[in-house]
Length: 425
Ligand SMILES: Cc1cc2nc3c(=O)[nH]c(=O)nc-3n(C[C@H](O)[C@H](O)[C@H](O)COP(=O)(O)OP(=O)(O)OC[C@H]3O[C@@H](n4cnc5c(N)ncnc54)[C@H](O)[C@@H]3O)c2cc1C
Figure 1 (cartoon, rainbow, N blue to C red):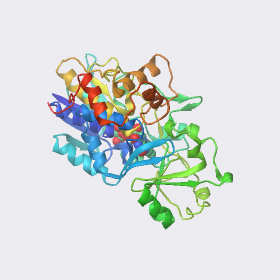
Figure 2: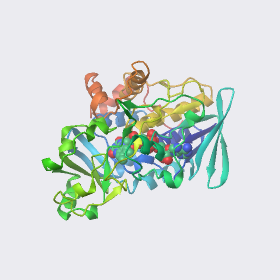
Figure 3: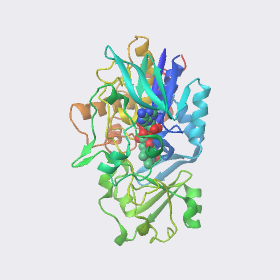
Figure 4: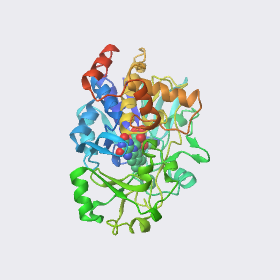
């Protein structure tokens, strides 16, 4: 079974791994020179309900990528406003670890290959066509996973944001995102809030070397530093722009909240450099990501696939979606969970077997179904969903899903009959 995964973010990596464990011959195609996509600048794991979701995946035999992020964590069990038991992976070391792990599991990785179109026949995707430099390539397959995310190209950031801020997706160098779902003729959904199309990414990274040594020492020691912003310099209204609703709390407007992911991760979409440099300890600050973090950030959630709860894209029986492409689901954990299911079901579809839908007795299954219903039936495209806060974390608590007790999670997964379902077949 040939499975082609397009997009090497966390969702695509998880899909490729899962499909390979199921016995698929997997090709993972990524337009840039590195895997992980926006995960190259993220790092926060296991905060709030993400802990439970990660443990569900481990109990289902789909936990390898969580084990890698755990191994590569600079800080564990830290707290910052609204968030408990978080870990922070080193963004510098994560990509090579994931790449060599996937290679060791038999995934064939094709970087600097940008998919530009699909070939369809009888309502199915037969192949994707791509470019590597000037060379035209073609990848045929039995089933496909769209993990191309929802950010870029620069036209979206120009139109709906403050312009290209030169984020890690590096569209000018590697070409903009191309959605496989859209190329397959499926009408995508667009996130919007009032006049805002999509949403702005919610954090920047500062070069540690440009910060006051005392701040750096505290950051290295504790993993988190909170610096109050003088009242006159507080920028009101930025929280509404953010796609990460779990951080849309007044603490994140009134303070500079820094997290240590190797760089100093600043929990705000952007902050004018001259204003930042007026705050004690930040006089020499320089942005590491996005390079123009003083003026803006990337715009995401502009193209999501209509899909069912098996993550099958509506109307194309052999096309699956994962991560942000699968809906208004924000986060690495969310991308890994949906990626694992999409990769598993891609192999099932190729074998013409029944697709797996995770039950709503599990947080991961409930989230996949809940987000689909919110988007399709209730038409709510302004909210974002994550295990780590806001609407979906509240639902997790109400439904009694949220726990850090591993045994309890194992029992829940066992009761659903899904222990080790994603393990090697
Ligand atoms: C600045 C920032 C900080 C964040 N911090 C955190 C955090 O700390 N913790 C957390 O949990 N979440 C964080 N997030 C959110 C999280 O990164 C994403 O929600 C999640 O990782 C999305 O994964 P994805 O694989 O769906 O998409 P993406 O990460 O967008 O990956 C999509 C990939 O597809 C590739 N691609 C696109 N089109 C093509 C094509 N045509 N051909 C080949 N390849 C293609 C892209 O190059 C990219 O690598 C952050 C996001 C940003 C932007």
